[in-house]
Image 1: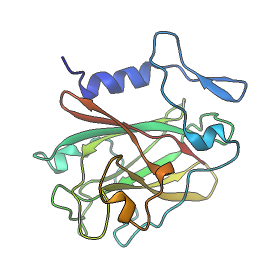
Image 2: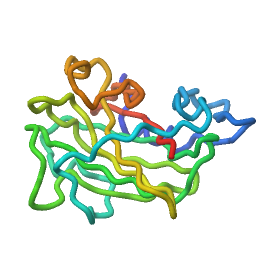
Image 3: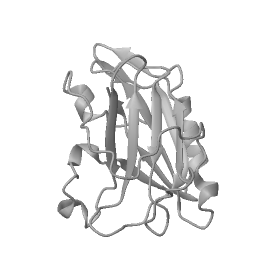
Image 4: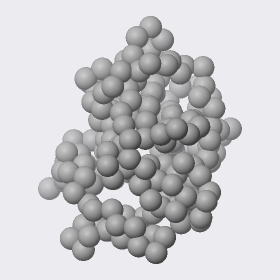
Length: 194
């Protein structure tokens, strides 16, 4: 039996984050997940990337974007917002936007766009859909992340094992999400270091 996205998200939310000598230790019952490479490297922040032509300010406060494309394949994207010493940054703004199941961006309204604030442990998540490919780009999500009172990080996250990654001029392997299959879609993980 394959685990659902909801069960994977519940497991993610149940994991305690404990700073320990510059690293993150997870509770003994929870599975150990790989740390964000940049976080373990010291002060190196998540790589910035261009916003692209389809960013719109003032996205709605919402985590569940999948109703905007009910027939598309579902994915939950989750992670932490951390500083360079692997400490969580609560109340960081996390904004997402991406193409739909046909490779189109909504330019009129806020379909497949939303934002939220990281919780007290620095966690964030969105329930959305897998974006389709469109000419010239690998499959990706756009993000803007801002810790309180600081500059905005604009970046893009990519899917592993995509044939278009090598041809995409914006792609960088440090921006790959870790993706696991779920019974009702996929569960992706990425930790932003800002």
